[in-house]
Length: 309
Image (tube, rainbow, N blue to C red; front, side, top):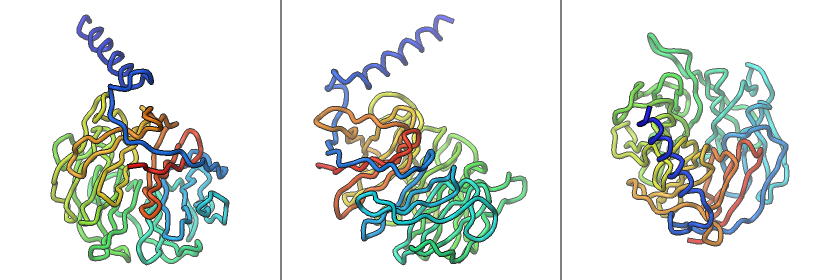
């Protein structure tokens, strides 16, 4: 009992150190400038992607649709509705847009990936299969790679990354339930870098794992904790033009920045004060404008910030 009390006190002290605004020496800052919030009428949005002209594609999964906004956050159009047919969704969660302008959606409740053009027209879809002894697939994010047309899917409930080609033909997979390297406990958001390496948010293991394009483990980023460089419940991941890795912690309400090999760089700040977000999840770095887009799930909004360094 005494050990439990001491552990709880230690947790509370660490939490207060990280999140007391007056104690600036407890974390390193990556300063940003707040630009504007976007409130498009979404209900607990989850993920985001931005195309070269600045249009923003937001997954509004509770409302079974994708919202498309211009670079200022003004609504252009939306597409999708509840259902199991072509162009219909059942609680979609993740999004990625290929260099060819194909919009890939992880249609989680329908166990599939759907693909659209930039105007929201349905192109095709494919099922995310389940192997012997597996649960029905639960695709929570999708990543369209430049390498060999690979499409990476995080199958949350089966603790695997499943890889298809652009037309939905299965290629290979890796992972299983566990805490060791290359294992997952509910893998989530995905992003790649210029070397086609894959970053996977490993939610309950409180880390991000890095793999080569074929699923070979390279390194991991973070571990469970509440101090800088640690995660309580990581959710979103993004990479910028200098290969810095941005990770949102939905429980702590912060975004931390690392090198691509896991070295801690800092916490997203404004005026050298930690920037607090409301359940940050999906992230996107718009490289040309050096803008960070943050989906705040419980805030039902997107926060847009300019990265200052």
